[in-house]
Length: 105
Image (cartoon, rainbow, N blue to C red; front, side):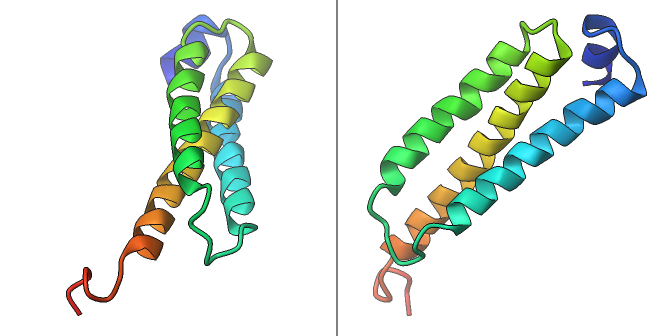
C-alpha cells in the first residue's frame, strides 16, 4: 500500500493514511449495517454472503487499476464494507444454524 500511495497516486504519508482509513470506515459501516439486523434471523444471510464476497473481490481488483485518490478511497471503503459484511455474516449464519446436538453439547 505505501508503494501504491507513493508511485501510483503520487502522494506521501497523508495519502497512505487516507487509503488505510478508507478501508476502516467501510468496515465500520459494514459492522453497523449488520448490527442493525435482527439477531435471530438467518433468512437472507446466504444471499448477503454471496454478494459481499463478490464486493470484497471486485473492489480491490478495481482499486488496483485506479489512478485517482478519491476513487481509490471509495473502492477501499467498499472493500472494507464487503469484508466485514462477509466475515460477520458467515459467522452469524454458522452460529444461528447450529443446534445444540450438532455443536456436541
